[in-house]
Image (cartoon, rainbow, N blue to C red; front, top):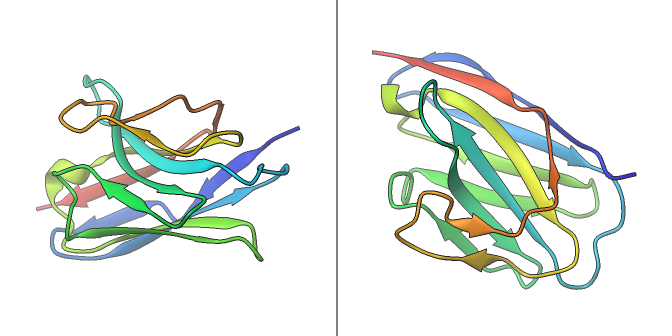
Length: 129
């Protein structure tokens, strides 16, 4: 059974940094996609960043040049390094995975990354001004 477990959430001041981790179980195929999403109170869930099995990455415009997604397949952990955090980054952050396909990214949409099959329960990030 696939499980995704996020950690690393917390509260920081604007301009600070945080690193999220997502420990994943199960066995991705040779083509897979792993991604981070977030959902702020009263807003729809939005895609933040994604990484495919070929190492390619994609970022939402709102986080580009501030966030970095990476994966350590040996440790089976997905990371999201978040720098220059802003109050508008406050949200519940979710890890998600598609173990059978590379990332399907549609830029300009809120969802941004499509076709995710597995989801974590989320970790809360609060950024104060």
